[in-house]
Image (tube, rainbow, N blue to C red; front, side):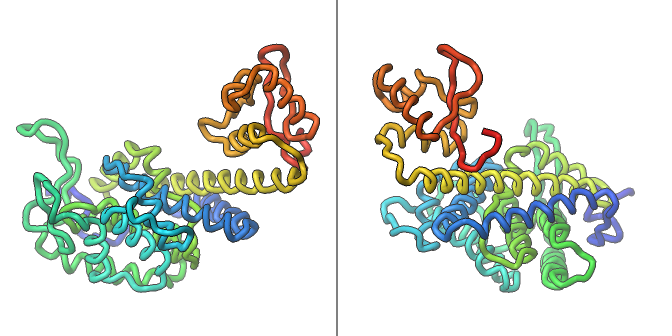
Length: 381
């Protein structure tokens, strides 16, 4: 009978891939990594620490969201911030859950030089489920231990006619399979000819295919990916969140995993998707840091400008961007609403901001006139 799952292939787990197809994606990712690290080095220490906190927080929250879990963002942020020494711990705003997730993420990224062992994985699993004994879960899971003897399947559809999207290797022999993976993970860090980004992609696919735990396999897989990326960059500081980019294409993530887990040991399709997703996360991180740098340059240029509280509030809203940042520019009516001032005051404030070089007027006139930030040194404005 022909193998149905990739782990049934006779040469499992000797993966292969088509280097010529991956080359362009690899080059783009490496170049983006270099640009991001260069940008990050030009950010002040306080802004750098804040950027790292934001990236770690985004990674934790989105990795859980991929599995359908919505975390208390404030609680996770407090747990991370305390461990990073950024602010005092708000004891009323943390939970065992957020503490465990923060501990897990920081152990993987800040202690990237330490070997990945079975004992470390089991610790990670316990941190992932710190409240299991009090959970009223319909199906209790083994915490800090490998899964049981029941088949590990990913299914959907009706109970009487389920669709099996994936089945993991059997429980018998799982320790040996996991030991093979962990030995490779250690040895491959110094393997000549294996790009660190490809290594991270292989580790992701291999571990999630083993699915060694009752639950939490996806989140631990993405933690191992973060560990591999930190090892490849040889630094603990993280400025991008790959889980956020995976969440943006969650259906594509599961689709390419399912496709490759039913195919041959050629995992080119998976590695292409992985590198494209990584590139998107690097580009998004660069955009965020550029925004931080632009905001810092703006306020440095206008440090002596005498601005009202309302003007400063609106300028910060525009500088922060995002969904609430008026990407198409802000109108007088919108300024009035944000600043909570009269129509006449809004008009006067905008005129002053134009005169001080804080804003520029966009093309158009009358009620449709809009204004946007005038960044210092921007020759296009």
